[in-house]
Length: 421
Image 1: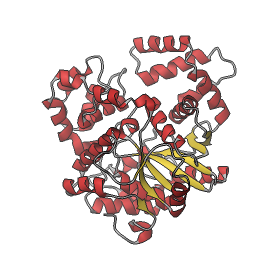
Image 2 (image 1 turned 120 degrees about the horizontal axis):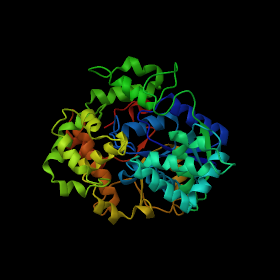
Image 3 (image 1 turned 90 degrees about the vertical axis):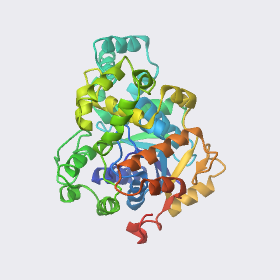
């Protein structure tokens, strides 16, 4: 069976994702699709609109066969660790043949050539990054600038390829595949019509997730009509159902009072121990939280040339979840995830798991037990904290995270006619 893997967030699942899914299946003549999906908090350091179970339903409705959760300690990271965690999860599944990612270039060979060059991390490249950082640039800016500087002397490599966010993330996927000596073959689908960071609609049907979220939160209440043309009917149905149950959609603004408490109740020394907190920025947080009345204002006040909006969001998130530098070091992130958390499956997906169960290289977790891996503790905590933004019962959602079994194509509302519990 030919199986393709995708790395996704689906925040929310829209027609651009449908295009990627359908093109991946068609181009690769895939019999099955497996996804690794971020959980309750995402790579840019923000909460998911709705919980991972609702987004799993969207994926299953689209036709995905297996949904696995990317652990919190990888899903909320910079591109290097985000890519490594997701690639290692897919690589632990012997039946996944190909990784297909979206990119602005759509040219896998060109991206592979740059990835091969960067993987070796030539001495001059590392030195150039330090030079760019010394200018006050953020690490992503320094990384891109260093690549541009070094590649100018490499006539066969196109430095413009690294000017787009999906291309850069794709490079990290390719380097992760190389680093782990994965059996998986990479390929890419050209991103169409909407740019990753687009904040406004530029097409009648394809839009970025960013622009969809912007439109959704453009009024006092969710603007369903504004986003309806850009998302499949099942996505709209699930979003509206979650809203009726008090489970979203949420943004960082739903959590401002909790974040303010986290920042105000900890000393600068305690904040200094939070993952990604560096160079005294904890003092800037302590100062600016007294001036802010909402999350967006806080981030804008703390943000600088060196620290991007996304980096600030991740610092805030790790403060909120108490993910510390010490905790991260104990998890040995370079060694990869220690389990596969199964969120959902189709009949074909169940068949794959059964057929290859002895060859899967990580334990598959479908029920939470007391002796679960330490890395999973952060996923459970993330779900409890994500539920603080809901209007419904927090205790009910915490219980659900422990008790919920993987969803199937017969267990949720859109296909099965049952309400999600």
